[in-house]
Image 1 (cartoon, rainbow, N blue to C red):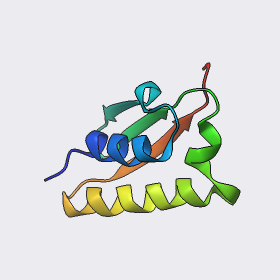
Image 2: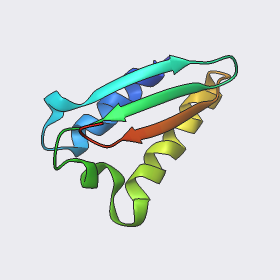
Image 3: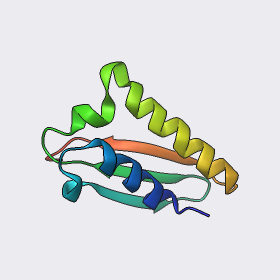
Length: 82
């Protein structure tokens, strides 16, 4: 069984130019787990993609992985510098 945080981290590190700056935090709530993702300067566009396609694909995969574990997860992409 894959940890949600590790799953997102591994997927995003492949996409970005600066994998050392990928920071993923998992915040477990009562019903939902929030995955916060921060990337290095210049990598935000690579994670979001044209029209948000890559971000939506990551969210879809995360939802599927979480559902297999009987959980609900939400991905929040935080802009660098925040």
